Length: 376
Image (cartoon, rainbow, N blue to C red):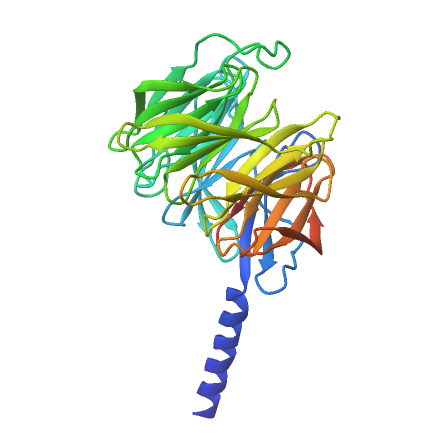
């Protein structure tokens, strides 16, 4: 009897200790010595971060997405086409959320230029991808076993280019954000200064044009990544070329965006070169975070629940050169920032009442990190 109780106590202590870890996957560029997707564990009590461990060898898994059931992960990659060119593709994995271990299920190509961003719909029956270099958006069905089917729809972006001739020389779809009601996919196009709206059809994995088809942002803004507020009433775009956040009011019934305000992400006296990167909303819905590459910082904004208006409360150094991506833990207590050029991950504690970040001594190295995805 005592022996059984001892074993039970050991098992309970192990499970409690195990539950203290947040697990994140790190997507990377593999043009140097990185080999694919890595996993790290973050201690939920202390913020301590483990060394990065390779969990899947894969060329250029630059962005990752988690299935709503938590059992599958989807990664972008490059495959060689019959024409000898590099094509964009999606790889499906089953995942052990307690370790980050991945098991490859299948891969499906777009048969077109490489991809930059991916999002899975709320039903887990389809995903949508954006191709910055290819100027198109595509969608895939997802089967019950987590595998992706052949590409189901492809839509090319067209329209008048933005005024920045160096960066807006062509359409550049940069990110996909699914609406809270799962009816629409909103795609930010840096080259056209537009955010496009597409209707989702999870039953067959396709997207189709919506009306209104898009909202036009400020000339030369270059919208990059976007996010909805937790209440679904507001929508925010981080504008890469003008270093600002554009806030929109969202009409859920019409699936329409209306510009409300623009707020800078940089200090007023900054005169150097910088571009924005990622944008996230705190799990409590009260704060918004935007990354600055060049200034190498994360701007923190308080969000007004009634209006969605933003007030900047902090600009905190990211802890390295080129904070390409960052993510908050599901409980909102920690933020991990990935510095692409310096090749490091830094950990910040998050004040749930004020939203402000405090850098911890914790972190780890990672080669060319460009995406942080928490599994739990």
